Amino acid sequence: MVLLHVKRGDESQFLLQAPGSTELEELTVQVARVYNARLKVQRVCSEMEELAEHGVFLPPNMQGLTDDQIEDLKLKDEWGEKCVPSAGSVFKKDDIGRRNGQAPNEKMKQVLKKTIEEAKAIISKKHVEANVCVTLEMVKDALDQLRGAVMIVYPMGLPPYDPIRMEFENKEDLSGSQAALSVITESEAQLWWAAKELRRTKKLSDYVGKNEKTKIIVKIQRRGQGAPAREPIISSEEQKQLMLFYHRRQEELKKLEENDDDSCLNSPWADNTALKRHFHGVKDIKWRPR
Image (cartoon, rainbow, N blue to C red; front, side):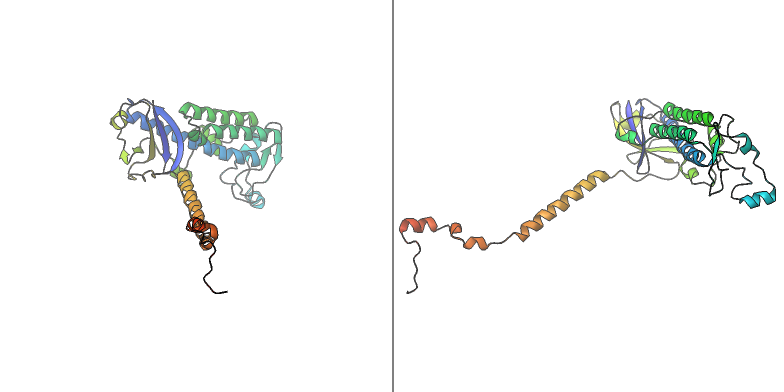
């Protein structure tokens, strides 16, 4: 199995295994699905953190309005009255005005937060350093855990316009958001390795050979963006170590220059003719008159 270290730009994403005989059309779609699924988990975790703190989403026509404005316009949050957390709620106002402030109690909040941490651990980029591969099934399992936690805390479900529910139902609308810039659709996905585009019409072995123990760094990006930047010759950590070595070497040379004092050469023990004069008996002869 060829080990693929998938990157987006210079940032590591995850490890993936694939046979060398894999069609690149299939591999590109697989990489794009795992990449986008990880982004979905990150978005859901981010919204669930807000859910644990401030409750469910307000209707779009009530978001950003003050209490007085809502009262003047006679607006009512009907879904907010239905979608209440189990074991009661605690009011915690959302300063941004996106959520209704009816947060779950401390026990239910911990259920959400613990599940969020577990889901983040499943898709963590630290798996790259630990040499652990991430599969689409693992990412789906993280989503299922998040969905289960929401069902425990909100047995009546979430409003249809809540971004968490929309993410679970694959109805999310990311247009105009920063998150949309990160998503790469399967049809637009393009893999690059060693400044070469991995064309979908070929197989992986056409580029990396038949050695199944090969490890390569592939970069995913949108079609038409051109070749990504090449990998640096040395990693950032190796560069830091190299700079540290040269800094220490310069300090050592600086100390040697400061200690470069040749006054010791006038000392008796530094006289290379002292032994000769000792045997000739001409030691300590003074030529000046007394």
